[in-house]
Length: 422
Ligand code: AMP
Ligand code: GLY
Image 1 (tube, helix red, strand yellow):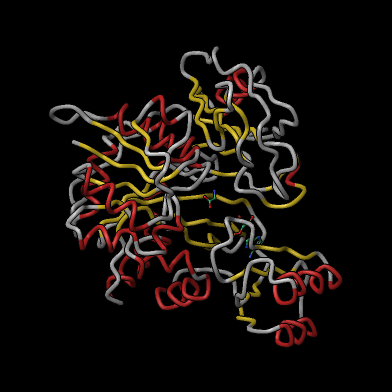
Image 2: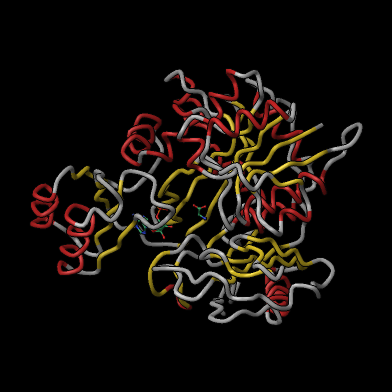
């Protein structure tokens, strides 16, 4: 069995490791990765010259290497139609087609599907111009929530405490076009605890994974701008083991049914970002792939064979009879980010302390590179993830912080309150 993982971050590193760790099939499992990174290169053969959004090159690589399955990590190649192109080449791929990936690629489309499917979500309107946006402010309650329609690497949401902030946000979307030319969703603010519930889908069924929570803001106390994710943990105390199926029936199944009805059946991971409000759970957004950094906390808990689940999800109804086994242990993931993140990210800072990783701790590489002398250096905003397991979230948290402490580089940013008080 030969699997090509597409991507270059901590999520893909976690996928590579989990594929190998949970493999129980006949024969050897060979894992390749494009483009990968220096950490992934220790666990898989990497094709560093093949970018994760270069659809043509990825299809060529999958063909040349005669892979049995391509597992796509990030959203960009999914939205660009990588899975469709691989299907034309007769290569099974884990992830949705371009048509199904619109659930993440367009928030306007996603809201439309949610409404048609009867999934609870925040009330909203669509703003198509600066004038429409300014007009919306005449009747606006604060905090106000704005979201760019298209992909924005988790940074397209601006929550405005007052009118001055809302006016500034409108300039960012429509005048500066910080997220490109895009429509903007203007929606009701939801208050509560957030939970990410991911499900593996086969076009008909949704098999939920364990619930997780991620931390999006750069600073302690959930202050500062949104990032790609500064940490995560699983499970979450607000969703018990026996509530998972019920929550999945509410947020995944109706979407899978609706997408099938629309002729764009959903295969791969459907990620529901949920707010647990006083009026019940409401969906904030869908992603069409594994979450980053939730995956780094979720997969070390997985006890089912990931490769088999991925293969089954590519076939309509293929997950029938599949179950998902998870360790009772909790997991906490920390992100070590580079100087300047998220506005910028400083590259080239030498990372020390990577040689003494304690047993049971997983360090995944997100944004690293080798410098000319062969040192591992920072090469992106999120640099490394450190994940530890423990009997409780508190125990996993203590182990994760203890393991992260000695891993140093200039300007290292590490939130100190990930999974605190859980
Ligand atoms: P999204 O990319 O839609 O998940 O939004 C990023 C983050 O912004 C979410 O994880 C929430 O923390 C926050 N957020 C998004 N929409 C809302 C909302 N309607 N009310 C409150 N917070 C929100
Ligand atoms: N953790 C949020 C995301 O992957 O989009």
